[in-house]
Image (tube, rainbow, N blue to C red):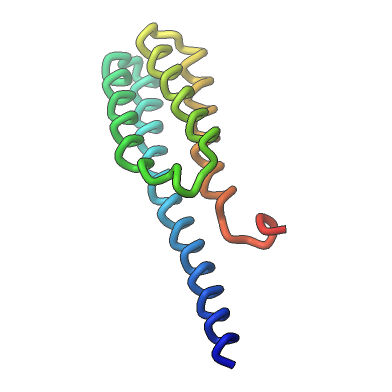
Length: 126
């Protein structure tokens, strides 16, 4: 009976840790998405200098918010996000509208995908 209770407690702790991790991923991703939306607002106003400054803020937020992500995520996904951020920064610096919008959209999709992929759900388990 003691073994069963111990295993049940371990299982509950693992599930709770999974939910907590997913909640933290959603909060971090939300912060990053707010920065991207601010860049998009600057682009709509044709304020390229502010958009470039906001890309620097996005990278600072990335360093702050996502420093613990490698513990729970695939490193390839993190690398892809970092590559996408670098591309977006350079497209903004060159004032290339089409490529900037495309890269920001890709970046938003990648960041949105992470909490969904890591969620503790039956479809993700099976």
